[in-house]
Length: 398
Image 1 (tube, rainbow, N blue to C red):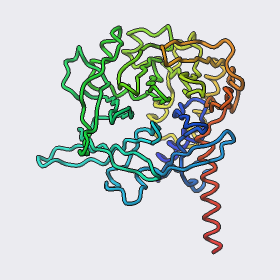
Image 2 (image 1 turned 90 degrees about the horizontal axis):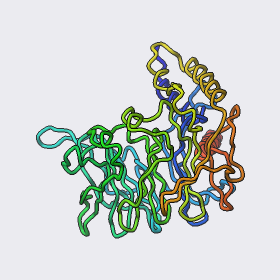
Image 3 (image 1 turned 90 degrees about the vertical axis):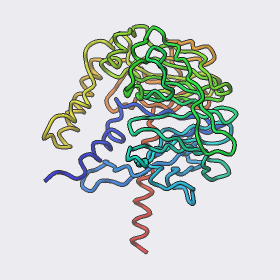
């Protein structure tokens, strides 16, 4: 009999189990607090420390990881004027100018002619509640990320052509706006990608692999970094325009980009530092990026008949083998004011420089400029599980 929890467990394994070779989502500074996404879930019966993730919430934590404020998932909002089925998947949360913004992708719907479309909902959290800002309809294959900017403008990036551009002019970035009195997102104009040395990558209409990117929002900038290639783009939030583009790694070539990046994902974690306009990044050492060890996760999932336990054991052994062959962790600092990339000879206090068994490669930036090597999102998820289990036991007693 097929295990009904298999897909859930696979997802949970790489969310909460073997974190060493999985990318973390970037957090954001909100004054003196740090905002992260906290998973909410329940333990899968019969599997110790394996959690079925059932939802999420944004939390603002202090340096001791104590939660100072919770912001619920937009899909759980009470009396929100959009059906919950149109708020099923959130594509990032970004704090800007005293409010939190998110974009939710809903279930597929049908036009009058029978064609399918997806409704994207842009919402803002302020005054302790979610407010609908606008909707945007696309075909079901389109994916969006929407970053808030000044004056009701947004930076949108997409895996599809949103403005009927010629392939030679293709860019994934767009300037958009929500007009006063209208609950619709309007794509105003494309934003040049600034990577003329990689034209083939951006002329491709699919660009699905572009969504390996992480987005870091600071006070004045939004920085998009591709985990597979190290390419980055820095945008002004005031002008909703590109400031600088570049790459973390000197070894990147058009051929590597055309092949969807290095054979192994080089970037582990990306976080904003509290100091103004800098982003801290830890990665594989650049000299080992082309040694031929590829990403093993997809291959494991493609092997028929493997049990969850077998996949977990193989992946653990493979991860330990890669760690032995690639023992060092490199640290970089990216300056968003000018796009300068600095490889750090001496990284901030608390940064791990060698992979060790059970070490996490996730890190949390601290107020004083140091780093704590901890997967805060997963830690909070475990705390949330303990809290839910405690509440469930209390309910049983009652």
